[in-house]
Length: 176
Image 1 (tube, rainbow, N blue to C red):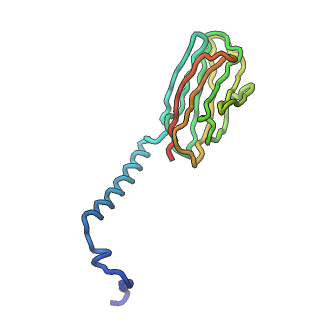
Image 2: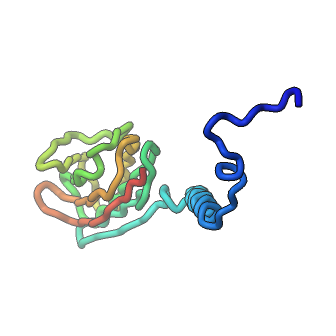
C-alpha cells in the first residue's frame, strides 16, 4: 500500500504492540492514577498555603503568628506577627528560628526593625516601644527557594529586651 509505513527491523507487532498482558495494563493505569491523584491533591491545596494561626501570651503581651503550615518550593508566602502590649514594651523583639531564613528568600519586612542581629542561626528584630493597650503587626514576605524541601523549625519568641514574654513552637513542611 502506498503511504503505509513498514515495521522497523527487530520489532514484532504481536509482541511489542498487540500483546495485552494484564500486569502491564494494570501498571500503566496505576501510574496514571497516582499522577492524577497528585494533581487533584495539589489543586485541592493539600500541599500548601493554608495559614495556621497560633497564639501565645503572658501578662505583659500576647503574640499571634499567622503563616502557612505547608508550602511548595518556589512559592511566595507571608508570615504575620501581631503583638498586643498589655504593659509597656520598651524593646519589643521578635526572635525567629533558622527555618524562617534558611533556604528562603526574604523579600520584605514591614515595618523595618530599629535594629536586627543574628545569633546561633536565629534572627532577632527589635522594634520601637509599644505603649500598654496598643498593638502592631509585623509582615514578613518570603519565598521558598526552588530547591528547598523538608521540614523546618519556624519557632518565634517575643521578648522585651532579654525577658521572654511569649513563645510559639511551629514547623513548616516544604514540598518539592
